[in-house]
Length: 414
Image (cartoon, rainbow, N blue to C red; front, side):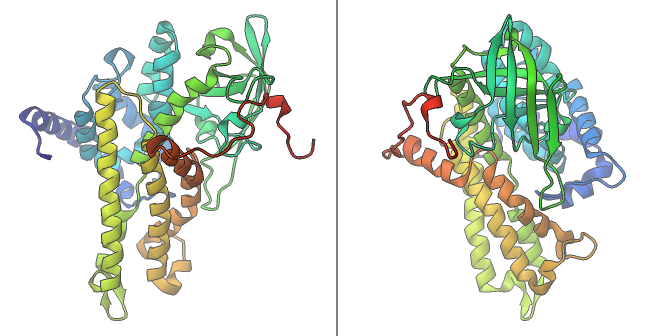
């Protein structure tokens, strides 16, 4: 394989690099470089406001959502140009975290199932960061079984009435819109009685409660729906065909999360290059070097697996189940790396304050956030099942509820 830029790619890289150098919010660069998964903060500035301003600046110059069609706010760029942009944006890409669900999951779903007028209305503000979207799938009783959801949508005139609860909804507290998966036919098997909608998160009857996490932040939320009215025009796909619609979202979700998670390996390598142990630098210890080599291989595998997925997209293919590999490996890797870094710190590993801890408490923050990473977008167990059944072709688990009407499936307490 030849990974050198072609003349056209080199010209694109030079253009992107020059634009970023002239327009990026350089005053935040050092803080962003030092931030990690679990703690991205800016002193004296609102992270959300800075992120939206940077996204709007990119959109105005044609650098937002590069792979999207131009008419929807993108650039119509090739997959490799998208990779080049991500390489050149560097630390500033961390400002895009608040948009990952909208750009990576909701946007592709809207493109596939919304009407033309709706695409022209909703997608450009999504691409520019003026509007933020969330994904309303998970529920308290369903766990990782998306099809086990109980939020009901009942037909009422020319619209629908929604009642129920969602949980673990990332960014719901600052989102403007969301895509919502509901149950419309409880008498059908659980995968066949679902319908997808999109809605305004400020709609009457929507209540959002942030969830306090171990790392002190509140990325996730509970969302309650009480007699929320949604017009039928905001339905995505056919009635009771929501599972097929959701597959577009879920496949893009696993690609976005798997490709976008910062595993912490570069930070660990730098940390080990400077950390003094009792007998010298950590990087000179053969056991430390062995660990680093293992994670270097995994990081490389993640990188090129992601590139294969991007190449598939360039051919017009829908993201496939193989993207679960990136999600599975990245989620466990960041937790293992953070735990190992804390072990190397010894007693100092219990300190988590940025002013006191080694590496400004970066690995402590990563470890506290890591369980959320392994759950969001599907647990490790769900990812392994998908890889086993849909990538390797192994026999599927026995599902006794597969063809049973949803309202006939036994539940605890009935």
